[in-house]
Image 1: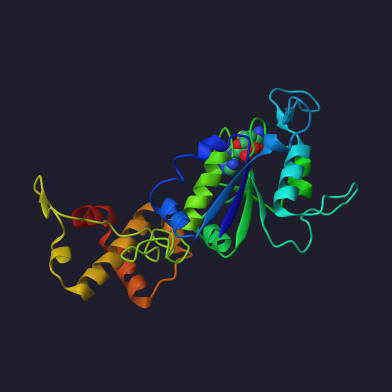
Image 2: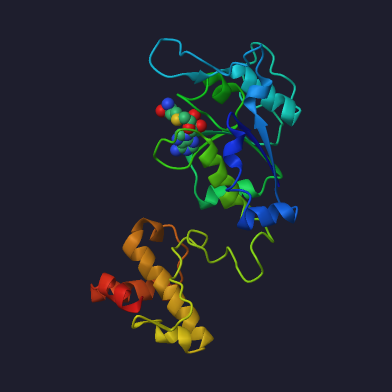
Length: 266
Ligand code: SAH
């Protein structure tokens, strides 16, 4: 899988994507990234990439020409002709994604959808944002990483690269799996413990020390259900639940002490 990232601040990407899972996936050839400095595609001595907003108001707006030129040249697209009405160069399979707080919200299902593509382009905005014509006539998708406003799309792009990369087959070590992760199953994940079994008198739940695999599996499932019911009840509406799951949740509701029960088990 290949990411083309278009940004005015390529140096920001050094670090977060050079370690751990993403770096290992890069080293193994599962994923590759190319950082494209939008400024390199700006014309004139000063390579200007932003300008004042029409209509006034504060802040600057990223100009369309350098972004179109950068994306068209890197992706090998024919330059959009004047007057072409349609967004999204037709038949072109590479998603061209604008990072914007106005886009559809990024979540695990969007990450899975993106992980199916061989190549993705991410455009990072700055300042007040990008000229609207980039959104309308160049991009094929718009993604927000949450209902807050960042100073630029770079951190959002890194979030997407990280979340998508760990879904690629082989990206996580053999021991680890993405299958149980929070959100992958439609539930929050069960709690984790490691050694020592007793820390400051806080003991690991006995069931995890029992070596009884089936009981451990049941405990983990129930903990995942409890946590989700307590913290993110909205997720239970769409999670895929078995009859046993539903019976367990009903029995918990009857006990009316979900929170206490969860605390006691942690
Ligand atoms: N004035 C714009 C926000 C500009 S923030 C508005 O109100 O919609 C500057 C840039 O940061 C944006 O162009 C976008 O690329 C990025 N950005 C900010 N918040 C983001 C978010 N929640 N998700 C993805 N990108 C975001």
